[in-house]
Length: 109
Ligand code: FES
Image 1 (tube, rainbow, N blue to C red):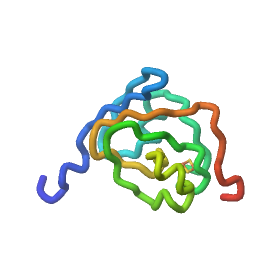
Image 2 (image 1 turned 30 degrees about the horizontal axis):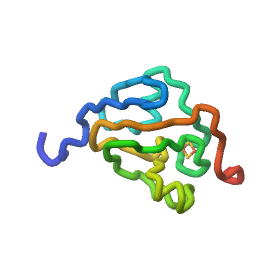
Image 3 (image 1 turned 120 degrees about the vertical axis):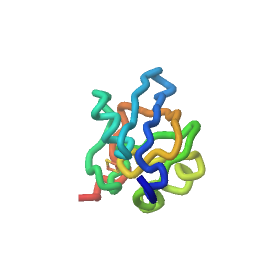
Image 4 (image 1 turned 180 degrees about the vertical axis):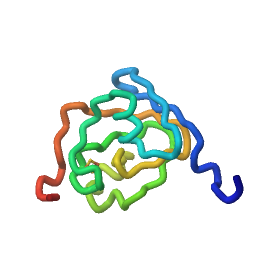
């Protein structure tokens, strides 16, 4: 009741390039929420190492659960790319996603 700072609010995500939308409930990360909604979001490691879950943030804010700079390069960071498996929503989001993308860092394992 006290001290949670609104962490578990529900938010809505729109994948701008497909028009798909889904809810994010209970403070789970963006990737988990997409998978719960049946969206085939690209992913592999789920720990922020491979970069395959990256999406371009068009609007909204996320909390980085791990430093995106470890995996995403400077150009991607400048262009508002995020890692879905390491993003907790602070607001509703609009993202763009390439469903055919692979890992950035094939040596993550
Ligand atoms: S699934 Fe590998 S960085 Fe998110």
